[in-house]
Length: 126
Length: 120
Image (cartoon, rainbow over all chains, first blue to last red; front, top):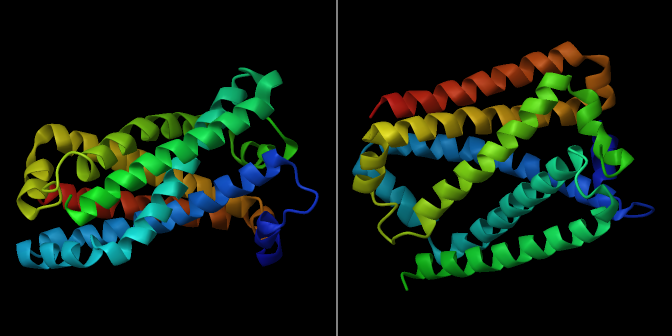
């Protein structure tokens, strides 16, 4: 099973589509782990204002911003690549699939950079 | 239609309805998560303050939106994990174990999150 999973990280002999697919699964796993963490930390709301705000004060910081920005990259990639897959699933623009893959990567980068900038401003209180 | 034979893995290991619902939940999540992220990170520096979070959780409209988000995200996440596990040798050998564990994980995540929504 581990060897199967490690194959996702192998680049040799893989097409761009295979790599996009491996990244889709990898980001899916990362986002699922984050979902569990997110649900767990939301429990702190039930413990009252002090507990919740001290948690927020710890996590919404410049130190955590790097992780948040990487998480947003995983989320944006998974979302945009997922839309690309759905698009092709219904037979749309299949003949242009390589161009659409490039365009979707460009969209990911643009959205990620904008979101990262906004989050930076948010965390820094600018 | 698919783009590459490797991209067929997920479709191949999931039942047709589970695959279709994975696509539909993915589309819905694109909208709901974008809204959730925009609201909590882009609108105001105060959005994560305790009072505002509790106010959102207490509002019926937000409750419905968060319940839908929770349902679709829990389904999409654990159905996706199920596809990954079914795609391994272990999953091919013990599909019922994988199906049961992933369904249980979905129920726990949805139940746990719902309790939080019901608390406000």
